[in-house]
Length: 211
Picture: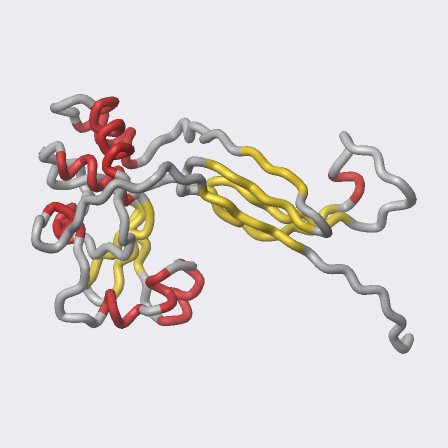
C-alpha cells in the first residue's frame, strides 16, 4: 500500500553526493523493520520538527560562526526590525533600526521539485535512502511544480539551480537507486564532522548629497 501523492523513491533524481550510512541506520532503527503508512508519513513529513543541537560564537572582527552536527543547518536570510519588535534587549543610544542575520534549520519535509517530467529530490535524502533500504517503494512528499527557469532560481538554492541541465535534461541523471548499486557507489570511513556557517558583515559611514 502507498499514500496518495507519494512519488516512487527509485524514480527520484538526486544531487546529494554523500549519504551518512550511520545516520541512515539510526533512522531505520527508530522506524523499525516494517513501518506502517502512518510511520512513513511522520518520517517524511514530520510535524514536531525536533531542533538539532547547535552552538555559535563571535569571531574576530564583525563575524560569527555557527556549528551543528545537522546537515540541515543553513543561512535563512536577513530581516529588518523596528526597535519595538525586540523588547527583551537593552541598547546603547537611540536605535533607529535592527538588522538580523538568521541561521537555523529548514522545514525538514521530504521535498521534491517536478520539472520537465523529472522528479528531483530537494530535501530529505537520508530519509528517502532509509525508507528505500527498508523496502518502502513510495513516500509522501511536498511536490513543487516548476514551469520556468526563473521559478527554479527561486525554488532551489543549490546544485539544481546552478546546473539544471545536468538533472533535468541529461538522458541518465543520478538517481536515488544509484545509492544502492555497488558499481556506482563507494563506501568509505570519514571522521565525524560538524556543519559550520560563518557570517561576516561590514559597515560604512559616508556623507552623500541631500536630495
